[in-house]
Each structure stands twice: as C-alpha cells, then as structure tokens.
Amino acid sequence: MSNIKECFVSRFKNGSLVCADFSQLEIVVLAYLSSDKQLIYDITNGIDLHCVNCAAIHGVPYNTVLAGIRVGHPEWIKRRKDAKRASFALQYGAGARKIADMVGWDLPTTKKFINLYYRRYPGVKAWQDSMVAYAQKVRKINNDGRRTQLGFPAGVAMIPSNTGRIYGFVEYDDNYNNAGDTRFSRNELINYPIQGLAGGDLTMVVLGELYYDLYQTGLHNDIKLVNTVHDSIVLDVSDGYVHQAALKLKTTMENGPEYLDKYFDINFNLPLKVEVTYGPDLYNQSVVEGLSL
Image (tube, rainbow, N blue to C red; front, side, top):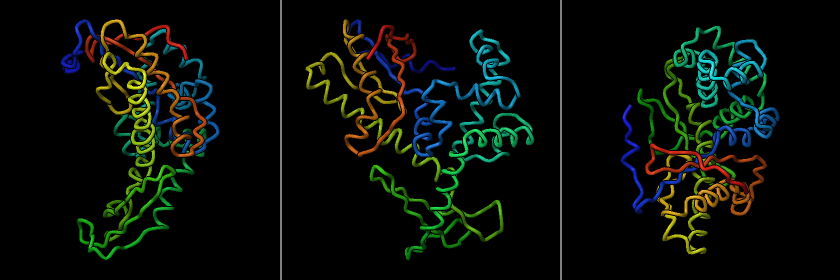
C-alpha cells in the first residue's frame, strides 16, 4: 500500500498536522433520521455495533465477540470486519446478493444477517422503506423530455430535508423486474439524506464555527484550518500549539448538536465522539492524550 499521506506535511518548522475524525458519524445520523430506539440506545451507551451484529450472525453472546476483539483474536477480528461490511452495505441500501458477494457469505447466511439486523433495528427498515414510498408519492414526470437509457420516461422526485436542502432523484431502468419499468435508486434515497446531514450540514457548520473561533481568539496564525477528508478535519499547527489545537478541535466537533440547533432548529439528541491525532504528516499520527471537555 502506498503511503501517499506521508507527502502531506506541516508548513511550520517542527509543526504538526492535527487530525480529528467523527466516530461512526453516518451511523449516528442514521439513528437520528430513523429514530430507532435500539440504535439510539446502543450508540448512547457505547455499545460496539459491529460486535453486536457479529454476535448475532454467529449465535454467540456479545461479550464473547468483544473479548475476542480486545485480545486481538484474528478469527473474531475477521468476523467483526465481515459484519461491519455487511451492516454498512445494508445501511446504504444493498440487497442480499450484493452483500453476499461483497463479504463472501453464502446467500442463506446473508439473508439471516439481514433479518437479524432489522429485527434489532426495525426503525431503520421502516425509515428506509418510507424514503422509497415518499419518492413514489411525490414522483412527477417533467416536461423536459427526460428519459432512461432504454428510452422510457424518467420520473423525478424532489425531497426536502429538515435543514432546507432539496434532494433530487431521477428514475432508472428497472433491470430487476419487468422490462419497461422504471424505479428510483434505493441506495440514493437512503444515502443522500445521511451523507447530506453528516458531511454537508454538520461538518460544514462545525468548520464555520472553528474558523470563526480561530480568528476571534487570534490563533489563526499558529493554528490553520487546511483540509477535510470526508468527515474528518485537518489543522496545520505550529510548534507548541498541538494540545491547544487538539482540544479546540475536539470541543468544536463534539458540540456539533448545539450548532444544528442554533442554525437549523434541529434537536440532534445523540452524542458525537471524536478522536484527535497528531504527527509530522498525515500518515504518521499518534493519539493526543489528556483531552477533556
């Protein structure tokens, strides 16, 4: 694997790149959007969601998997990784066959996993289905001549978010059912609201608050906001300012729910957890210890 991250270094002599990443942000946003009680409980109480799903598919107690992970047991590490991939794919709208091909399970095992996941988190399934149903409800055929690749009229659905975004969805040819049918992409209907709120809204307001604070406190010359990588934020920090920068970054990011309430009147009542690292480049990073809000 290429260590391309080593190419990104601090501009300061003896400086550091300080990076912070939201923990499981998209799953937290899914819990908020779906209002699934069990998922909210698991997140709020620090349950390892992938260990839960791994335990379910293998028919063992949660603590068995957790203990195996903590001691570095290779078999349980692999099994948890497979469950993680399967759960993410399911959350993004993938079907049983696609998940089976991705993870390497047979189809009965994959269908069992899906049933167990939705049995534990029924609110997630209900929300996913509601997005598909709502798109069908508001579907319109515009007068712009829009058609699918096979030449059939393509419907359009415009779905608003609670932050004021309007997501536009266009139908595709339905290659899974009858020829000539069209359908919206389930993956898009599920993913757009999650990605939009996580990366497009929450991360952006956090960036704005952080940028404003750095200038208000006069720290912008020694702590520079330089990059985002998905839902992580990167600061370029001069020598002697690492701990201050890390604490400010962690505080601002974990205060994200306050900013959603401030700007969008959203009651995002779920905790956001952030880990902060630092190093001479983006590849060689170590955890910043001793941070507390």
